[in-house]
Image 1 (cartoon, helix red, strand yellow):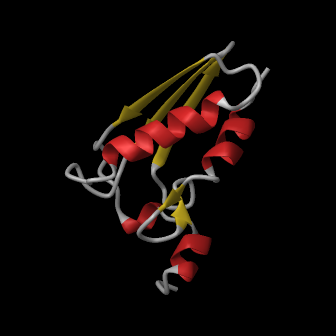
Image 2 (cartoon, helix red, strand yellow):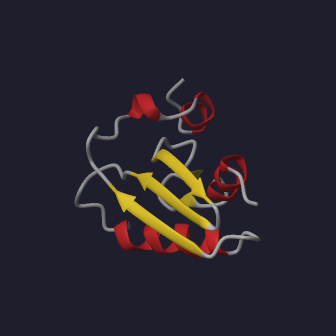
Length: 99
């Protein structure tokens, strides 16, 4: 059975094309729920009008269905709470010259 850790590791393979930082370290992932063969991801983007909205959702769905034992993926994009740079990891901030 797939674990939340497996899911998070796979999500680290998905980069924000603008920053070249993965979506986990950017702080876009709010919650991951794994139940049997179903994975639900709650994530955000830098802004509600982000032009990459559908691309990110598609990449998350495609990436997670590549995991063994994952039959269904649901991605919920939310903006409450809104994303802010404080959500970024130290690694991401350093890569972007913010530390």
